[in-house]
Image (cartoon, rainbow, N blue to C red; front, top):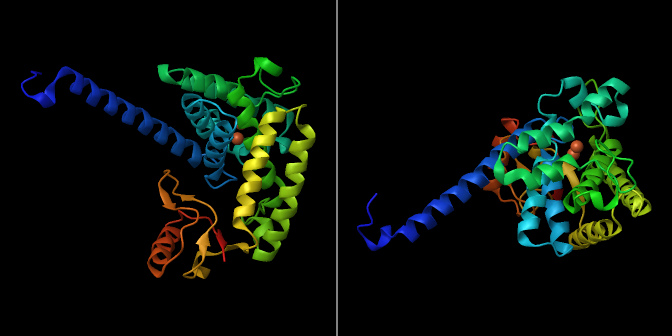
Length: 296
Ligand SMILES: [Fe+2]
Ligand SMILES: [Fe+2]
């Protein structure tokens, strides 16, 4: 290539190359994250998304640098990548419901994920965090039974967001084995009751385990974020409705992504006739959960 115009100065070429590489890198992470989402059986693709973005918010709240926040967010989005390839009987059950042998196989996902990510030179920090996302402060976690400061701070952050999301799903929205329909959201009323009670139980659990399993400062920062979010929703009614019950004026209480990681509809978006038609099309293609969370 010759530098025959001011646009082609070596520094400009380098800048362009740098930007392209950065974009390629982010694109690679998006592709990996959408693969992880496609392997989530219980959470309809929402788990990695929630863990990634809530962990990043927590990291920011704790004053981590932008580079560290980015690593935590990426590790959060990819933390369960090692589950890819696990048999269906393990993916469709919660760890506590697994036999001893199946639990041992499930527990390998933290290390498997780290091994996968270490293939990329720029993902070694992320790989270390992924490796340790099931470690607990007192050494009761896995796979290496690390304690206290031996656990990367990013992993301690992901541990809290991951536990919160898993526990909210564990009891509140357990699936009916036969129909695959979430038990607790057969009606909006029962979901509200289950979710608000469950929320309090889960937050109490995190509080009780702060300083034991989880880092105290992380639990405090995560709690602050969740409480602020709830307050912002105010006393408006949050409910789950089937897509064909969506009406203009309602707004979405969660982001919705396709199985390939594309944003279908963003939280807070006020629904219009047009956006409802688009959402219904996505629902027909199976790209929306059976019920979506709205603020009415
Ligand atoms: Fe995990
Ligand atoms: Fe997880």
